[in-house]
Amino acid sequence: MKHVMTMLAAVAGLAALSTSAHAMDAAAAKALAQKSACMSCHSADKKMVGPAYKAIAEKYKGMKPEELAASIKKGGSGKWGPVPMPAQANLSDADAKTLAEWILAGAPEK
Image (cartoon, rainbow, N blue to C red; front, side):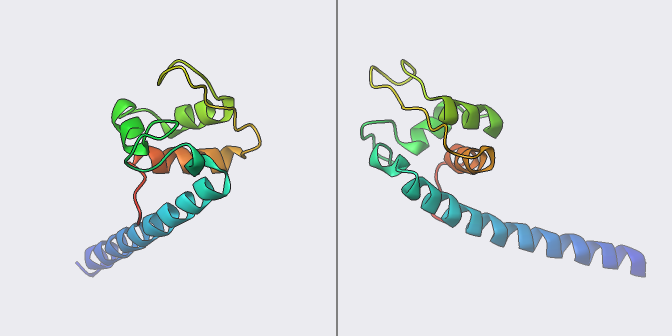
């Protein structure tokens, strides 16, 4: 019984850590989006030059972050209208995945 209680406490502790890590990841992802000039064409909830991140999350619900990360790095056109998205080839794979996870989550603040 003691072993089960220890395991439950460990699982609860990990869950708490992942929740706070997720909050830090959202802040880091938003800062990365700002640093990478993504926010000059996109916002969380309003269409600008490009679609809002919440609209992207809705359209691509269920998409793997790696797929969206590849699209971010490659750029493209025709998915959201006539304005092309320039390639972000200088982003590392890890940074592109961080942005993709944040966007697919709806660009949360925390």
